Image (tube, rainbow, N blue to C red; front, top):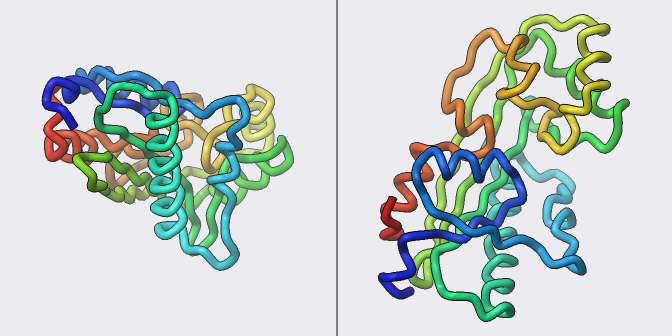
Length: 204
C-alpha cells in the first residue's frame, strides 16, 4: 500500500454508528459497501454450534475479504480497509439482529434483569496482512416491564441491532452498569481500533 493512501481508510460497514465513531477519532474514511447483487447478510448467518467469539471473528474476517474483492473489482485506490461485527451473547447463545417484533421482544425479555456480553471484532487490512482485535464488554440490564419492552419494540429501534437494542438509544435507561468499552458496545471499540489503525500506519 502506498504511503500517500494512508491518510484515510475504507469502511466496510453500512452502520452509521461506526462511521460516526471513526469521525470521532478524526479518521478520514470512504464507505466500501456491497453491490446490489451481493448478499452481505448471508455472511452473518450463524453456523450450528458456533461460539460467540468464533462467530464474530469469522463474520468480521469474511466482511473484510468481501470488501477486498470489491476494492479490486472497482479499481479503487489502494488503502487500508476496516471491517467490524458486533454480537450479543448470553452464555453460548448468540443474539443477533431480530427478524421481527416477536423475536425482538423475546430477546429483550431474555436480557432483562441479567448480565450479558457484547462482543465486537475489528479487522484492518494492512500491507498484505490482517490486523485483528476482539473486544468483550459486559452489560447489566435492570428489570424491564412488558409494557416498556412493547413500547421500545414499537419504536422500531431494536431492528438492525444485535441483541435488539442500541446502548446509545432509549435502551440506555435500562443499563445499570457496564464493564468494558462503551464504544465497543455501540459497534466499534475506539481504543482497539485506534491501535490497529496506528499499526497499519494510518494517520489521524
